[in-house]
Image 1 (tube, one colour):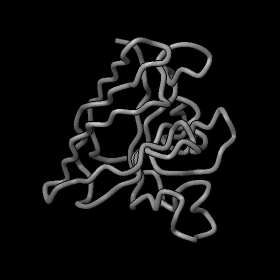
Image 2: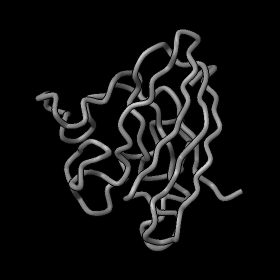
Image 3: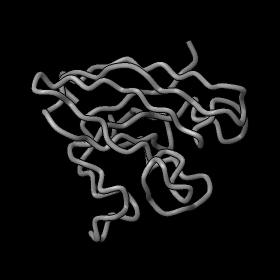
Image 4: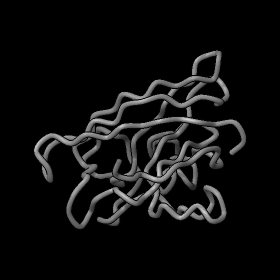
Length: 143
């Protein structure tokens, strides 16, 4: 995890069915695209490894953020500039902050490589987006 740091803010319009806005910034990344997901748990006892798989309460295949059939936690890619900084500005219709499928208490995870959005043809495309290892993570909590 090293020097990767960030702050993200989540806000939901008309919970529990309104879209959720995720905004903020992450620093310390290598330049380029990085898979960005919500993972199953906020358990960081073994770093990002202990966050489990992508948050997937409906047991669907991995997909792009705009796909109806996808993991709830599939947020696509963030892109770090040449200074390793990524601005996050995502609006999502499946992420919720309330109710039985709330993402509060789960974790954001940044991956080392680009998420192929389930379209890459690799054996892990339909489960992880073939985005590589986990380089940064943080728990989603109420402030």
